[in-house]
Amino acid sequence: MSVIRGFSVEGVVACFDEPNQIGDIFDINAPRNAPAKDPAANLTALSWHSDLFQYEVDTEFSVTINHSSLGVTTYRIGSAGGGLPGGTPPAVYLDVYGDVRVTDINLGAHTAGANPIFMVALDGRMLPSGHLIQQDTTDTGRFVAPWVSASNVFLRETAMSGTNALAGTSRTYRVMVFRTRAKDPSKPLFAGDASGLQLARGIIDSSRKYAKQVAVGESPYAINLGPTIDCVNGGVRTATGGLTFSEALYAGAMAAPAYRNIGL
Amino acid sequence: MIFNEGADIFHTQGSRVVWSTTRRPVVLLPNNKVTLNSFDIAWPHPATSDAYGYSATTSGGFTAYAAASFVTIVPQEWDSGLTAVATLPAGCNYFQVDVNLARINSLSSYLGYGEPPVLLPSEQWHTLDGASAVAERFSLLVRIFRFERIGNTVYLRRKQSVANVGARFPWLSGNNPTNGAGGQRNGWTYGSGGINGHPVSMRAQAFNAFSNRGQSGMAATDDNTNYASTWRGTVIITPGYIKA
Image 1 (cartoon, rainbow over the protein chains, first blue to last red):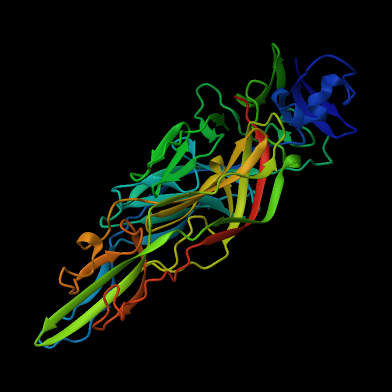
Image 2 (cartoon, rainbow over the protein chains, first blue to last red):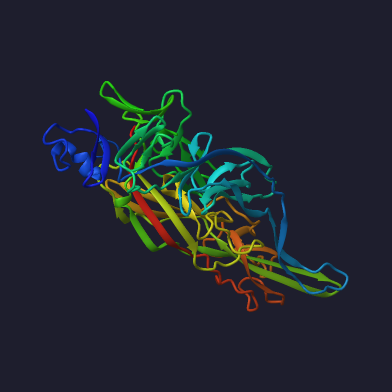
């Protein structure tokens, strides 16, 4: 049976499946209340617990970024011999084709404060750091890695051209920033009125959104449960939401990890 | 409102489900997180060889010479293996990794591009999807790191890979800088193991009559570069659970 119980002495509120019906329902030490007392050892029985971090949404938005093109630059590196009367001096050199450009793109602002937990999704799948979003030819590529400051979410873009230029491209990213919320000792374990319900001294509130199992018909975001990046033969494979994305050079066999679909 | 339906509990706000026992929130266990301070993630200097170019031209009774040596990185795969860094509570099926790292040493420049770029901005926070990241790439070398879970233990793995795309230079036949009569040949030769090496840095130049490979006035071919890389900072590993 699923229950919501609060224990005022311990300041704990939890929603969980009772493992049995042994003991007093008001006693956190009773076997039936084990998930409330020791959430780490009873995770499969828990829906939520006031001591756990529930991914409370602070900011979410979609943003379309027009990634700019990168042309070809040729660098000549080498040595040239001395003057030669009536002739062309010998020279030994390499012509290196291509360019590298590193840019930090501001995706947008958040209000979650310093060092928040955040996620950035592309096409409904979380974005691995270093994900290849574009490869026009074998010697070009565009890689992105999301990062966050105390006020904004950014995308570090590393663009590379070779003997061929890298064309511009557009991508739409879904940005989600989560708030770490502390218990408010001035609030009760359970409170509610016509406007909503608050639980666990404000940890759970009707007015907020939380990352949770996705419902039928909802647009999901895939969170990966295993490694999402590999490299072999100088090429990278990223994997997310059950799909793999490989550079032309990649010669490995990493499979996409298991994942869970969540909604907000 | 909050209500039960059968054996399940629903918490709703209007038509929106805030959470329910059939739509459980994703949770992390902050009391069980592991914080690694001043933590190093490092990759070694890659195996290298050299490419040597020589050219002599005669005109008007005079001969001029030019030679240049290049450090090349050769195709290779390096895998650090697994290093245990944290233990998770049993029952977790998910863990989140947040990192704030900076590369702490300078690398040699490569070709005309300066110091190799970093794909993760230094001293900024990243939540790593799949606990994985591409850290660096230059020339045909790429470096990654990832945290992997086996049982209840979290391990760090680092990998470094250099592509094999065949010969990058038009090597002289037989890799021989001289012709059958002992004369010097114009062209490129490679050092030990360097037939498929990628140039990363010009090592030296020479402009004298004895500047071809193997002669007394040749340009130096020792490796004077350093592409070993160390990143240092904070890694936070937080266990969690996501209901299927």
